[in-house]
Length: 465
Image (tube, rainbow, N blue to C red):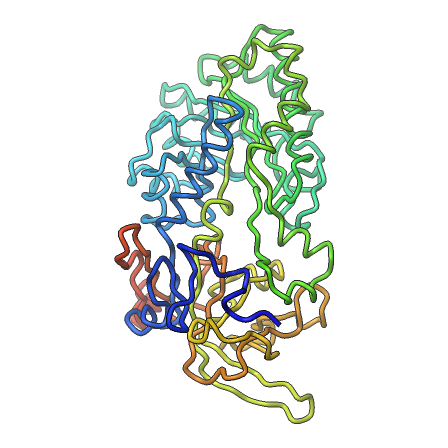
């Protein structure tokens, strides 16, 4: 059995065990929840900056003109956005609200792209007036909608057209967005007509690029290469027929995060699921494979001034966040031999755990150096049976138990790792539970509150009666 010092989730300079307790960039996890309450979201400023810098360096080693548009839907906390901007990132937004937040943080117009399948006239108007890099067009209807709105305000809109290429990945089926059965993008049969319509409306739009997003937590480079080749073919064909040169290709996001550090828990997850959850994919490898697949040598001039856009979200913020929780109750089942740990963090704070049966590795923050060898059933406080940290369908997706120190008792702090992406933004007040605070451990070592803990008054502050 592996003891805490050898666990794969411990890493020098980020997650460490000191005096028996888990630390995040030197900040004691147990002390954090004593100061700020439990549950508690914790983010590492240093990790966010390192992930952003690392991605940019990787892709720029292959192609010099890159836009690294962080997918703000993954975590749109203002301190997170500010950290990414300071680290040299750009931004992708998916709503008028995310656009508003990006502008408040100070992202410049040419740093912003706007995705979404159901944009309103108001959202489109705001994007055009700010002059963003591209509104990613998701349908023929939306193309005409953008043209109409642009003409109504006398401004030109920068657009990119999203193509759905029918490319299957080895990710979770609900995270695959490059299929014709999905709700996203224009099908190949619609592209020629869309291109022609875009060029006809030069008074209202600047046709700047093409866009593909094949999904999230994609474990292989091959789907990206095929997607890029598909867009490159359209780009070359458009140039040969019309002389129009696009200025960017957007290959989307979906670069994976390793949710399964070296732990025996991985043995209890099915092979396909394990491969997806533990995927590691180098961004330079992805881009190099894409350029090779596209046969750039056929039209090398078209690449000279072309910007390649990426939309990483999970890859930047996923492993930079933790969710801390306390054990509030312990019960045993004599009939089954199970020991249950009941915590104060339910799926309302990490929706993917039930939405996608997602695995977040659980460790003891109070006893980080003790052997994690005792099997426990672990569950949250919510009022339904799905609020558990394991698979209630008996091992179809997740392990049936979590391994923790035998000495775990009520009051111990536990940490759910790699919860930086989607958990905070999808959190709710289900069961009348105020949402937790969020803190960020700064690069200098101090800890600051980046989202205040909600009060009971916040539960009804928007209600009228």
